[in-house]
Amino acid sequence: MEQSRKEFEQIVGQYGEKLYWQIRRMVLNHDDANDVLQNTFIKAWNGLPQFEGRSSLSSWLYRIAINEALEFLRKKKQFYSLSDEGSEECSIASRLMADEYFDGDETAARLQQAIGELPHMQKLVFQLKYFENKKYSEISEILGKSEGALKASYHIAVKKISAFFEQYD
Image (cartoon, rainbow, N blue to C red):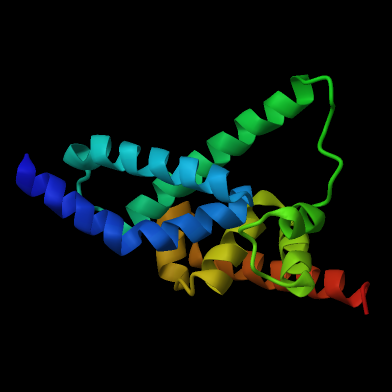
Protein backbone atom coordinates (compact mmCIF):
# COMPACT_ATOMS: atom_id res chain seq x y z
CA MET A 1 0.00 0.00 0.00
CA GLU A 2 2.79 2.44 0.92
CA GLN A 3 4.61 1.67 -2.35
CA SER A 4 1.50 2.32 -4.45
CA ARG A 5 0.86 5.56 -2.53
CA LYS A 6 4.39 6.77 -3.37
CA GLU A 7 3.94 5.75 -7.01
CA PHE A 8 0.65 7.62 -7.12
CA GLU A 9 2.29 10.71 -5.62
CA GLN A 10 4.77 10.55 -8.50
CA ILE A 11 1.88 10.37 -10.96
CA VAL A 12 0.28 13.41 -9.31
CA GLY A 13 3.59 15.26 -9.50
CA GLN A 14 4.13 14.34 -13.13
CA TYR A 15 0.61 15.04 -14.44
CA GLY A 16 -0.95 17.44 -11.92
CA GLU A 17 -0.04 20.71 -13.60
CA LYS A 18 -0.86 19.50 -17.12
CA LEU A 19 -4.23 18.19 -16.01
CA TYR A 20 -4.92 21.37 -14.03
CA TRP A 21 -4.46 23.53 -17.12
CA GLN A 22 -6.63 21.27 -19.27
CA ILE A 23 -9.36 21.43 -16.64
CA ARG A 24 -8.87 25.18 -16.13
CA ARG A 25 -9.39 25.82 -19.82
CA MET A 26 -12.69 23.98 -19.55
CA VAL A 27 -14.09 25.35 -16.27
CA LEU A 28 -12.22 28.71 -16.37
CA ASN A 29 -12.18 29.37 -12.62
CA HIS A 30 -9.06 28.56 -10.54
CA ASP A 31 -10.91 27.21 -7.49
CA ASP A 32 -13.26 25.13 -9.62
CA ALA A 33 -10.30 23.73 -11.56
CA ASN A 34 -8.60 22.71 -8.31
CA ASP A 35 -11.78 20.97 -7.12
CA VAL A 36 -12.15 19.11 -10.42
CA LEU A 37 -8.45 18.16 -10.36
CA GLN A 38 -8.83 16.76 -6.86
CA ASN A 39 -11.85 14.71 -7.99
CA THR A 40 -9.84 13.53 -11.00
CA PHE A 41 -7.06 12.17 -8.82
CA ILE A 42 -9.53 10.58 -6.40
CA LYS A 43 -11.17 8.75 -9.32
CA ALA A 44 -7.76 7.79 -10.70
CA TRP A 45 -6.62 6.46 -7.31
CA ASN A 46 -9.82 4.44 -6.91
CA GLY A 47 -9.64 3.19 -10.50
CA LEU A 48 -5.94 2.38 -10.60
CA PRO A 49 -6.44 -1.32 -9.75
CA GLN A 50 -8.74 -1.61 -12.80
CA PHE A 51 -6.38 0.26 -15.15
CA GLU A 52 -5.44 -2.36 -17.73
CA GLY A 53 -2.91 -0.36 -19.70
CA ARG A 54 -4.81 -0.60 -23.00
CA SER A 55 -4.10 3.10 -23.40
CA SER A 56 -1.27 5.18 -21.99
CA LEU A 57 -1.50 6.39 -18.41
CA SER A 58 -1.52 9.96 -19.73
CA SER A 59 -4.51 9.28 -22.00
CA TRP A 60 -6.35 7.54 -19.16
CA LEU A 61 -5.79 10.48 -16.80
CA TYR A 62 -6.82 13.05 -19.42
CA ARG A 63 -10.00 11.08 -20.10
CA ILE A 64 -10.84 11.09 -16.38
CA ALA A 65 -10.04 14.82 -16.10
CA ILE A 66 -12.16 15.73 -19.13
CA ASN A 67 -15.07 13.61 -17.89
CA GLU A 68 -14.85 15.20 -14.43
CA ALA A 69 -14.74 18.70 -15.93
CA LEU A 70 -17.74 17.92 -18.14
CA GLU A 71 -19.65 16.54 -15.16
CA PHE A 72 -18.82 19.70 -13.19
CA LEU A 73 -20.03 21.89 -16.07
CA ARG A 74 -23.25 19.87 -16.40
CA LYS A 75 -23.97 20.32 -12.69
CA LYS A 76 -23.11 24.01 -12.85
CA LYS A 77 -25.39 24.48 -15.88
CA GLN A 78 -28.24 22.72 -14.06
CA PHE A 79 -27.65 24.95 -11.04
CA TYR A 80 -27.83 28.12 -13.13
CA SER A 81 -30.87 26.96 -15.06
CA LEU A 82 -32.68 26.12 -11.82
CA SER A 83 -31.59 29.21 -9.89
CA ASP A 84 -33.57 32.44 -9.71
CA GLU A 85 -30.73 34.31 -11.36
CA GLY A 86 -31.12 32.56 -14.71
CA SER A 87 -28.09 32.06 -16.88
CA GLU A 88 -24.76 33.75 -16.37
CA GLU A 89 -24.74 37.15 -18.02
CA CYS A 90 -21.01 37.84 -17.92
CA SER A 91 -18.96 36.93 -20.95
CA ILE A 92 -16.11 34.46 -20.63
CA ALA A 93 -13.61 37.24 -21.34
CA SER A 94 -14.94 39.50 -18.58
CA ARG A 95 -15.08 36.59 -16.10
CA LEU A 96 -11.47 35.73 -16.87
CA MET A 97 -10.30 39.33 -16.55
CA ALA A 98 -12.00 39.49 -13.13
CA ASP A 99 -10.34 36.24 -11.94
CA GLU A 100 -7.43 37.12 -9.65
CA TYR A 101 -5.52 34.04 -10.84
CA PHE A 102 -5.85 34.86 -14.55
CA ASP A 103 -2.52 36.29 -15.68
CA GLY A 104 -3.30 36.73 -19.37
CA ASP A 105 -4.07 39.88 -21.28
CA GLU A 106 -7.20 40.82 -23.18
CA THR A 107 -6.07 38.80 -26.21
CA ALA A 108 -5.77 35.65 -24.09
CA ALA A 109 -9.20 36.34 -22.63
CA ARG A 110 -10.64 36.81 -26.14
CA LEU A 111 -9.03 33.53 -27.23
CA GLN A 112 -10.80 31.77 -24.36
CA GLN A 113 -14.02 33.53 -25.40
CA ALA A 114 -13.58 32.24 -28.97
CA ILE A 115 -12.82 28.73 -27.73
CA GLY A 116 -15.86 28.89 -25.46
CA GLU A 117 -18.10 29.44 -28.48
CA LEU A 118 -16.88 26.27 -30.23
CA PRO A 119 -18.98 23.11 -30.16
CA HIS A 120 -17.93 20.71 -27.41
CA MET A 121 -15.80 18.31 -29.49
CA GLN A 122 -14.04 21.07 -31.45
CA LYS A 123 -13.24 22.80 -28.17
CA LEU A 124 -11.66 19.67 -26.67
CA VAL A 125 -9.69 18.86 -29.82
CA PHE A 126 -8.41 22.44 -30.09
CA GLN A 127 -7.38 22.57 -26.43
CA LEU A 128 -5.56 19.25 -26.54
CA LYS A 129 -3.78 20.02 -29.81
CA TYR A 130 -3.03 23.73 -29.37
CA PHE A 131 -2.36 24.03 -25.63
CA GLU A 132 -1.22 20.51 -24.73
CA ASN A 133 0.59 19.88 -28.04
CA LYS A 134 -0.85 16.35 -28.14
CA LYS A 135 -0.46 14.22 -31.24
CA TYR A 136 -3.64 13.24 -33.05
CA SER A 137 -2.97 9.61 -32.12
CA GLU A 138 -3.03 10.45 -28.41
CA ILE A 139 -6.08 12.70 -28.77
CA SER A 140 -7.74 9.77 -30.53
CA GLU A 141 -7.04 7.58 -27.47
CA ILE A 142 -8.34 10.23 -25.08
CA LEU A 143 -11.54 11.09 -26.96
CA GLY A 144 -12.22 7.82 -28.75
CA LYS A 145 -12.47 9.46 -32.19
CA SER A 146 -10.64 8.74 -35.45
CA GLU A 147 -7.56 10.80 -36.30
CA GLY A 148 -9.23 12.00 -39.51
CA ALA A 149 -12.24 13.31 -37.61
CA LEU A 150 -9.94 15.01 -35.11
CA LYS A 151 -7.92 16.72 -37.85
CA ALA A 152 -11.13 17.99 -39.42
CA SER A 153 -12.43 19.24 -36.05
CA TYR A 154 -9.15 21.04 -35.35
CA HIS A 155 -9.10 22.66 -38.79
CA ILE A 156 -12.69 23.89 -38.42
CA ALA A 157 -11.97 25.15 -34.89
CA VAL A 158 -8.96 27.16 -36.12
CA LYS A 159 -11.10 28.71 -38.87
CA LYS A 160 -13.83 29.67 -36.39
CA ILE A 161 -11.33 31.16 -33.95
CA SER A 162 -9.69 33.13 -36.77
CA ALA A 163 -13.09 34.45 -37.84
CA PHE A 164 -13.84 35.41 -34.23
CA PHE A 165 -10.66 37.51 -34.06
CA GLU A 166 -11.31 39.10 -37.46
CA GLN A 167 -14.53 40.62 -36.16
CA TYR A 168 -12.47 42.51 -33.50
CA ASP A 169 -9.90 43.92 -35.95
